[in-house]
Image (cartoon, rainbow, N blue to C red; front, side, top):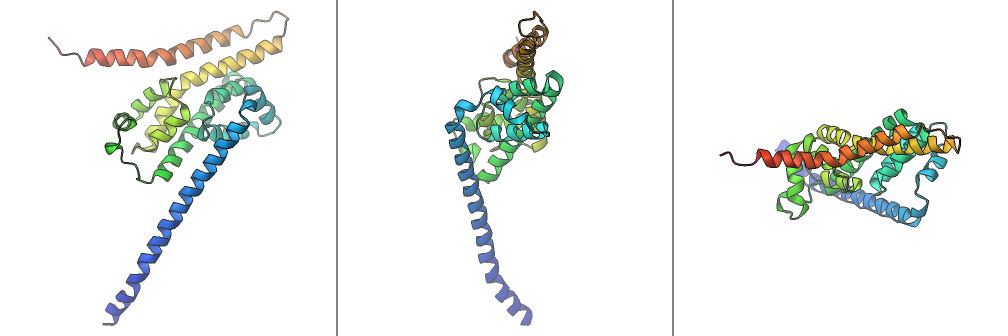
Length: 246
């Protein structure tokens, strides 16, 4: 009886505790969305100042410029700022090779932040199997793993932030998502870091006739061409493989 009484008294406490935890999670999601909306409003308000030169002038003054750059990249990924601006700034600020390192790291960390944020806010509210439009596309990406993520990243017309949030609605493992994002974003990252490096070297050369900026520009154009052509080649190969045999 004593044990039964204890169980009877303890049972009603579980309901309010669980309800309070659910309310806390809901409040956290609402606060996260409010902060995101405030950030988007700030980006829209100061959009004219979002250019590579301004980013370099702001970040370059700090001794820990790489860490500041990574933080800026995460914020840009969450707030729909094109990551190409950060890649250009990386080339201007760090040069070619270190620019690729920091821009590549920033793109993956920023993509992961958006992915995890969408997963946290969603919390199972959206069922992709019963969602039209983007739902079937995301389900195919989920089934394809890191390869599908890489192919999705290689399509230049798909906004970086939108892809982060959309893929966060899937059940993709974090490791597969991060690997696919790294491989898929790398060609475009290299291209724009090279463009930034070329611009920096051209400005440094002034009118002295130096042509050191030509090689990075050519490499950047080649990487950009690869990022555009790879999805088309993959789709063509897939179409050939799906043709019925005679």
